[in-house]
Length: 248
Image (cartoon, rainbow, N blue to C red):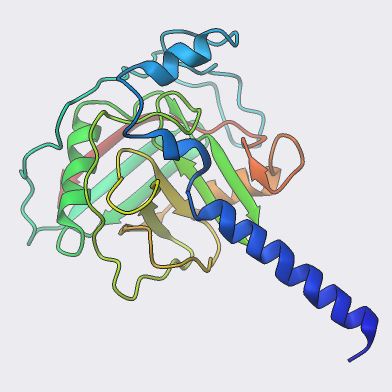
């Protein structure tokens, strides 16, 4: 092997390791979940010129096929404990994300990840996800769009956390929906949508598969990251106007 080729391969390996280290505490500031008091993330952001009520600006979407968000603000509700189990784990459930860039439909895997699906159904029923921004896009090595934080900072959550599920042999092909976390047993509300096959350690609870709307994710991914890097706020805003979960 030539020294030039070897150098290129070493550089490629180094960049992959760096990317996976970033994902080791996915997704970025989610590590603050569980140590922030209710509403603290929003309070910190208020000094930065964003709304103290929502922690985000609902800016005009710039990508093709995207529109202005529906009127409203994230409600930012908080709970002290994980909701009790109310779903039927033998039934099928479908989540529908109505976004400013189109509809994303998810088949939820209640049998494989019952507590995760139960929490997602509870939060969507409380309109917790409504009017929130998908705040993080990765486009190099790992191909995901992260959503579910009403503060759009990577620090927000519902006030409770719950254990991991469905990790044995977990993989993350395109279409996977999985939980972001700050380490074992720290799931809250943040989740990510995989728009291209992605290799990750089996540390993130997969709880659904996208069955419609992959083209919506393609629009966001194609526009890239705001600062031109491979990891950060999407250049095209995608706001979740509403999120609903129904039993099939």
